[in-house]
Length: 149
Figure 1 (tube, helix red, strand yellow):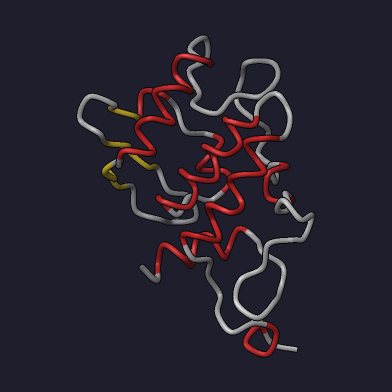
Figure 2 (cartoon, rainbow, N blue to C red):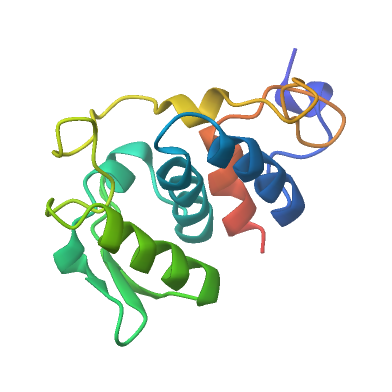
């Protein structure tokens, strides 16, 4: 079965991403961090490895910019940060200031370069959030959303 047969589109809408962020923020002691990871990954089309390796030296909160080092032969770029991202990053900097990494794990170092737990978060009704007519939401859906904006 092809992806087109499973679902009508290959990306999430902004509302679907926000619906995914809400339960992430409520789960565990790092909920705000996890919701912020979803927001930053969505808005900047970051791969998991790009997201977990993001360092504070790449973020300029005063000018509202983030420098993204792409993997897999991608081109590095500087992206503008909007209001919700700036607020999230400022709060993360206050809460996790002891690490050079924006998103830190339990030991104050970089998060493991693996699939973060927030990709498996369900909505408030304990239903997996799905794009369009069905199909499991994955990281590629977040990436495709940005490409289709």
